[in-house]
Image (cartoon, rainbow, N blue to C red):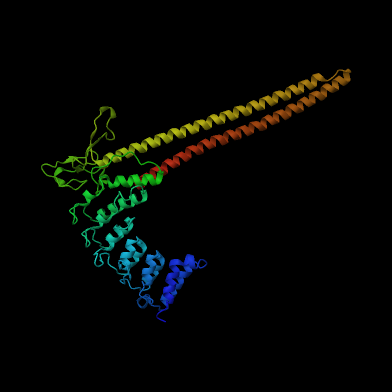
Length: 445
């Protein structure tokens, strides 16, 4: 019956909402049914046209059932069939809008172009991925690597850079801020130009908030990792659309080699002067190099602060903060080690005092027993003295054995306390190493 849902559509729906309808059936089994139907010759579009509903592929993409969507793509589903209602997006644009990288990869492998556009919005998959509330830098790089045009305009005259969520709308959400900053760097790294203007006459460099995208990313990652206030860094005058900090150690850039500011891309002229960053050697404008800093290796007492660009200043400020944190943690670790040593010494002294007091008490008891015995006769006195001496010797042996056993316990305790101190030092060294590794992985310079 054409008016009924066919088995393939039912299998696709089961993959989308199976946790509620078929909780006892594992997902691998549901995907196996879908593959079995496709291999048996089931129509990938089922009867979507007759029922005027979305195809199984679009249903799976909309429900975020990416594994089922990939199975349908590999099974020959129609890759250009659009949604029935709403924006009428094809699978590629819908997957890009929902940041489903695996589905986009499968569609690209199946031959769908990365620069295909929709009507009438004229948006490409790159536009849709950039306009996502939480853009994926990995998805943007994937589309760019397959030939997507980073400077293409849609029907409204907007480019992918302009469609990214603003930092203001993402304020307070560190993960979104980090995603936006990574998306900016992915697009610019793929050839997006920040100096191109849209229909309103604004360029991305003017639209972007007056704060370095790398600085925003650094603050976002710091908030994610530490769950506390971000480092005390100053805002930059312009967004640094080039990874200027990566040029650290490069040769000094000649004035003639830079026709525009290497930070904000504004062209130089007779009124817009060039300046050099003394750390990176890059040529920047006055607005992008308003800070002064003491460079590493220069004596702090000389007070010879030199001009640096915003990226260099923020990097130096961040390194200072990291050094302060490491110094504070080192002091805290030393204080903990000293406290453990003091506690160990106190425990050893108390145990020694208790052992000495017990031995003295035992000795007094033995002396009292020997003196308290009567003197009825010489023989009995000799016998009693022998017994007292034997008892005293036995008690002394017991006391010595007890002292020896207690001494062994004290030695073991001393070793354990010392091992605890070494473990604390090793733990601090490990955490410091992990922090430095994480800092290197997340550092934008």
